[in-house]
Length: 168
Image (cartoon, rainbow, N blue to C red; front, top):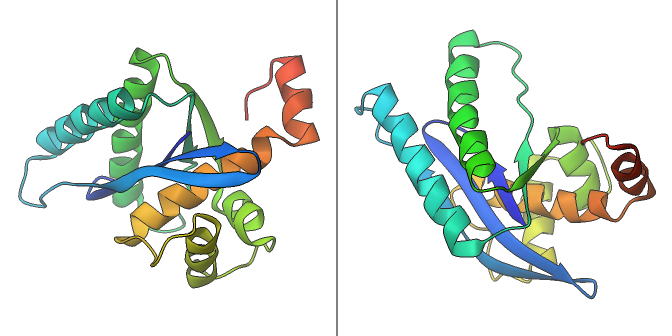
């Protein structure tokens, strides 16, 4: 299971295995692009590194955060473009993609949809039995997204949706 927190300056990623009710972190980190790079080169770096990560961890599924922006349209468009190359990397590697809203991630990780970012990060640390919260925050967010998918995957709703051919 590979969790992705999309962005164009920082893309958080985290690979986990969930087996026997236990979480096992396989690897995590961030793809960081330089603000001075031309945007198309930033997208290329994100695409290439995402391919490398997929090839290294061979996930069954990629869970990615759905886009939600209130204000800055320019930022939203740039993140959407970065998200597009991430989704393309998954598609070209035959990896199923599931999407989750920030509310779904908070609910799955903490049991409370209005949890603070710090609460989500601390619970992620605890569930994965890590000594400290991974940095940057985008990495911890990616791991939380992966954890969210493990919860959704086993849910009755998920099984119903799979039987009906409806993606999450």
